[in-house]
Length: 305
Image (cartoon, rainbow, N blue to C red; front, side, top):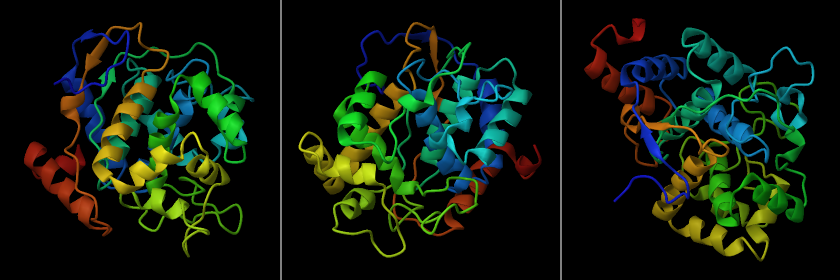
């Protein structure tokens, strides 16, 4: 059985440069502190914001035009990517022959698998970067109406069920991303009560009459959770972790190829770490596991590379 979801037009005929991508992974995991931290979680959000814009798709445009005073990062929807921006740009400087589009989507799949319960999403390379910026107003926003959210999602090329699955990434999300600077009273609060586990608590807690103490809720999440056209999918994911993990993986993979199916893609999934079971919500647990994994591959000096 293919590890790839059934996507019309998908052709994976290129060859992965494993050596190069192992180096990129090693640098990125080190910068992410080997854990489900702010950078890893922000990378998942960035991958969505680059790809689901309804124009160029997963083309790197969100980070590729820093000198444009009206680039995509100036949009309110794209605030607080400060640290993940600097991190990925620094990696791109080390590997200028790799597209920013590939680096962003790789960061997204790596950030997902670094979180306990996060699926090991297939990863392919050879995306081509945008030659012009996209319109960030086409991204769904937290204050949009349900009609607007669904229309923007359809324009981007995603189904309603895929939207519900992708919103599950809020299980590891919070309002102010990786900027560490609160912008209002609820900024910095997570979207569910287990922000370091990629689980189904997010789906369950959005269905409650009010947010769990110590968490916050986006109006858009509540709208999708209760709309007639999406509420059954929402309920299904809330009750079945395995179904959620599989469909999130498929939807994220598809999202990462929006606008890129005409390229000669190469399968580089083998370089990704193994997925971790959900439930390990201790700050030290993931770093220690990753340290052992990397020590086994690179020896005692892996952290100096």
